[in-house]
Image (cartoon, rainbow, N blue to C red):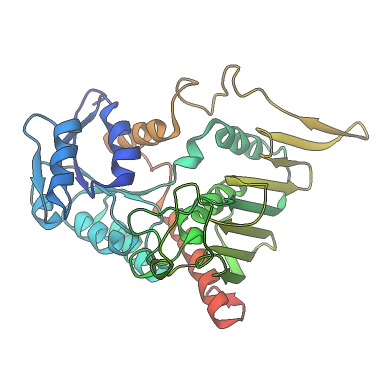
Length: 362
């Protein structure tokens, strides 16, 4: 079983495929990339030539790819709007699915994916690779060991000063469902909820802003955008109360006039200690009546929780553990239930921002 090759089909051969999934899968001894699909055929052909098996097939229609019964796993790497229906179709076709984050364009579509996974018995996971970073894995292990006690306050941070993605459809609300909240805020929220082991939200209050989309010159890291193309928010913030009373603050922006730019990090505050990622990982608490700060050296060795070499990249570890879950029938590292919770909260923040009222989860 350990040497079995998993035949994989790729749907969507754009930036996230070439920047993350394809290089990571190509390194895995159990992966065989046998099919590539993109509405721009040239992209699929290029990916197949660089990463595919010798006889890899190329498609423009993903439904044709799904007809190949030899394919066991499909990676859905398309814009957010199509995550749901492609994933559901793939699950119904008998494939296990890795879908890039966010799970879907909104909570209703994410629920369809979760239901399809349960109905078909096929595995579904979402690409939250920031869980696989050494600092994230260490934070999770400390939380599991009870270092922080009852975590009742946390902050999920994904803030950029001027790093608006100007390629693809990132600025298109119809295709993506939103801006930085659904793009990078989703990573920070997932990381935070996972470290807290708390996926039961009660209500949230959200605000979104479109303040900088028409200010030129932009000073943007990736160059100016066209004002008419910028149809999403440039910043979004959420106040989330969980069923057990814990509070999570979520802050996300592609462009904010601030210097403390940090992305996909968390702050945890509990009854026995706390953690932040302001300078690596820092743990604080009280010991023998004195305040202390512990800064572990994440470059020296590894914890038992960290499976793999110290130089394994997060996306490589994500791919390895995903294939291991398929081959050995394990629960995926990121479960669809967890990802659905993240989508519910993101959706709630957007709805609260639009209505000006708190959004309550049923």
